[in-house]
Each structure stands twice: as structure tokens, then as C-alpha cells.
Length: 278
Image (tube, rainbow, N blue to C red; front, top):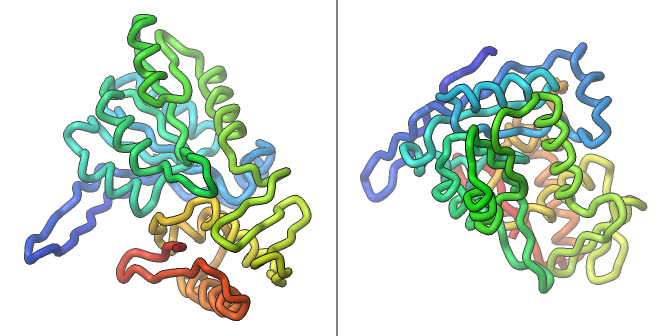
């Protein structure tokens, strides 16, 4: 696995906060691998990013190897309680599609994940980030506590790689936005993914395919800030030859259309980070 260590620094009130770069990214997928990724029905706009917490133990490493074998885009970090600031930064700027908690610290992980990735929209509460807890030995009481705390699935004891990956895929299918059959609504904007239709206050808005996908992503993940590289991955896919200016162009074009239709939500640029939809 090729992994590049990252370090990001921020200045706040004259103080420089440095985040350790143990949040690692795996190798880029070649075009020859794209057909394998596409074959997994639910992988539509680039391989989902999976964050594995607990990469410094055998269980976490086993989870990483199993996911990489299925061409997921795997990120990893060590013990959460040692890197809480880093985890919060990841969740704010570049959240994964799913988290595997294997460090044994699920009581610390769940509040950060579920607290920052749930919001009340259109009269209902959505949690955008699925969580699987894996452990070599959890009692039934501990498993129940993990589920009650917000975990979506718990795997205790020795697990087979094939079963683990199947559970990951099943959970991603269950928690995917209701894109295939349900109209997505945010403020006065509505999207019908099945028929590829967009509306503002009930009036149709013409969107190109990529514009539609970009707006669909932000409407199902409102309020959060996303970097340009992350947007290229999830909207355009990993096997693309585009730079980050492409995102700027599409955001600008989409913003003009939304303003022209008097949409209540607009894109906001966050300097040095990316965009959010408010």
C-alpha cells in the first residue's frame, strides 16, 4: 500500500495548530481497476472512502487489507483518543463514506462521528455517516451499548474478510441517500434523481449531468465543507484527468443558475478549504 503522510496547519488567534499526518491515503486506482470497482453495483461516483480507526492493531490492519482487496479507497488512523482533533478535522473537511472502528474506543468515536454528521432537515433527522464497530471480544452487553450509542453494525470475534466486506457493502447500500426513488429536498430546491429533474419553488431548472451530480451531493450533505480534491473524487470519480479548477468552474456555473432561479441555498467558498452549501 502506498501511503502518503499528510500534515495540515492552521492559524487561529495567532496560534498554529498542526494536525499529525497519520490520516493516510491509499494508492490511486488505475484505469484497469475501474471495471472491478464499477462491478460492485453501488459504487457509482468513484470508490467510497472508508476510514479505518485502529490501524495500529491486527484487527484494524485485517480490515484495511480486506477493503483494499475490493478496491475501496481506504484511509486509516491510530487510536482516536490520541488524535481527536485530527478526527474532527477529517469529519469537517473530508468525511469518508463509512467508518470502521477497530481501536476499542467506540465510546469516544461515536460522539464525534454522529454529532458532527447528523442534522435536522425538512423535519427529519439524518445521519450521514455509517459506523461499523469491530472487536476481537465484545460481550453482548458491550455490543448492545455500541449499537445504542449509534453504531450501525457490530462485529465481535474473529471475522472472515468476505463477510466483513459484504457487511460494509450492505450498510453502504442501506444508508445511501434515497437517490434512486425519492425526491431530495433542501430549502426551496428539489431533485428527482430517478428522472434527472431539478426544481426551485416548483419551477424546473435545467442542469447538465455533472451539475446535477454536484448539486445532488451537496443537497444530501448540507452545511459541511468539502475540499476540491474530495469533490473531484466523489462527483467525477478517481479515474479522471482534471484539476481542481474544474470544480471552481462547475460551482460558479451552478451558482449562477441557482441565483437566477432565486434559490434559497447557495454555495459558499471557504478560503483554503473548499465549498459548503448553505
